[in-house]
Image (cartoon, rainbow, N blue to C red; front, side):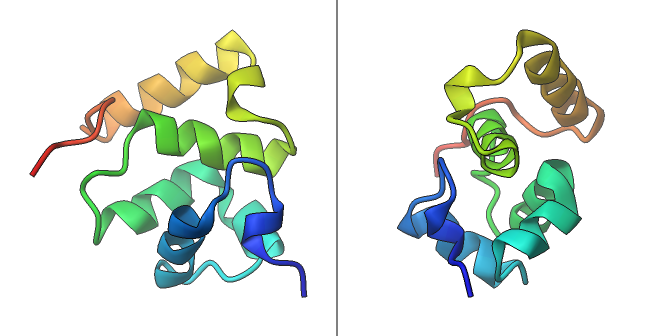
Length: 92
C-alpha cells in the first residue's frame, strides 16, 4: 500500500493529521478531495489553513503546491472564506 507521505507536499506531520482524519491512503485523499480533507482535519486542528489546503490539492494533482494555477488557488481561498476558515494558522 502506498503511503500518503509518498505524495508531493505530504510530510510526516500532515500524514499523521490525515490519518487521524480517517484518510489512510493516497486513494482515500483522492476520493475525499482537498477541501473535504481540510474540513476533516479542521475538526480537531484549528491551525489548518490555506497553505495546508494548497498542499493537499497539490498532493492530489501530483505537484508541489507552489505550482498550482492561480485560478485554483483563488477557488481554494473562496472555499476557506465560505467556511469561515482563516487563511493563515491561528497561533495558540
